[in-house]
Length: 320
Image (tube, rainbow, N blue to C red; front, top):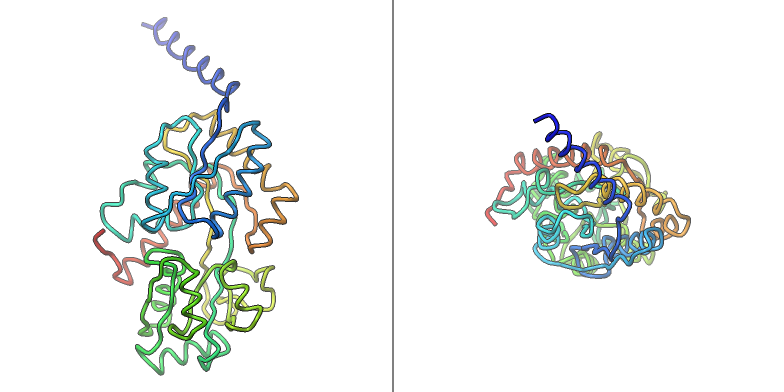
């Protein structure tokens, strides 16, 4: 019996070592669960290019938009756990399962975090016709005009939506959420005045802030954004602890072989430190992070718990 167990362990170790030496031996697929043009797509393609050069294999970007990112994430969760299918995703990967029933993946059980690739705050922007020039004035206006403010988002369950719900909870004001199919149409209606304010990605909002079609009020990070250094954080503006991170994480399916996980983590961390990658990240207001796999797993659990509380307290749970 001991000889049999020893043979099994030896075979497993030998197989693992052989896998590590051979991996990767064919192209990798990087699923991007949104349409081309957004921050996930841009950062995913930037990362994919660097990984391709480092790994010596093509990294093929595969845009799989739909259902707030669920389609692309599900495709990855159900793929073979061999290290050849990955997904780059934002906080919706943890928000969707707590916001609605019957999401076809469990972010903790069905996916494995490879690394948190980068972070970016959202920017709180208002239509210039709204008579507010600061977060404090926005709060005062919302409380003085219950139900009269509409805020736009990129869709139900997206980070901009949850940031708006968190603001509602923190200030106790009545405001109406207006979901769109992406930040592009949300920004268009914000500029036109159909909605009054929005939390959005720096990528989406920056052109409109630069030409003054929108007024920036604050960013949602723990510190000021290098892309918008003149804007205070929401914390500075008077809401302690208000931090919303539009982070981007690289995930594979659960049971990813340890050698593949180790290689992918090491190469990802190396890729985002490359000067070209750092410059590309800075262009869209994303700060490179490059965590260990263990740090990424702990961070994802913390984000899952954070947004679960917001969904519960705001009574947002809905059937899919």
